[in-house]
Length: 250
Image 1 (tube, helix red, strand yellow):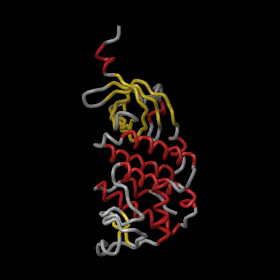
Image 2: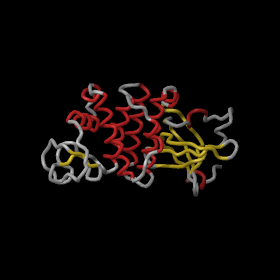
Image 3: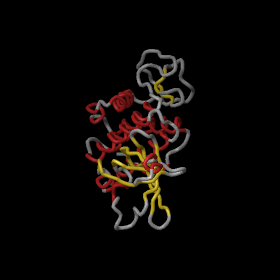
């Protein structure tokens, strides 16, 4: 007969693998973003052995249906069924790999303490990884769109139309990460960058998912938008992302 305490601690959820690191000779600690339980850290026992039944299902960027047992410090993965095999196609291309690394690092930072937005962040990340694996759009555009949407989901939605500080109708010519996006001349702090109008249009398209506009943008505006997105991200996360410096920009 099954141990009642064992059964009571068991749960099932869909999850995307954010990060892994070695534990002992054959195990791994897996950082997961689950659909219904937020961010979870769990042990996958024996996963590094060639005979492991988990195999590649618990590699970064993979989406799986998992059975877990709650533990005091770390949960334990007891079953894994692949749902989204994005890891291999992403890892095969350097530009896609570095973009995915930024996405998962961002998701980990945003969901570390925020339980309420866990399901929305999970859905957003899985959608972005799927799009990246299919090469639906240029990797850098998928990344910047994901970052803007993830921040918006976390409560830091930028404004690219009305003034982010006073609400005055736009368009405006200055950008401020601390103030939340585009700002009017009355609210503009000294030294604020003044992005090109086409860059502001691109940023708004990335936030709203207007891919026709985003895909038709020029590289000069993509690079400028990327710099603004990075500054906005790092301001609100209050830390730099280690993986962001490796992303290649066209």
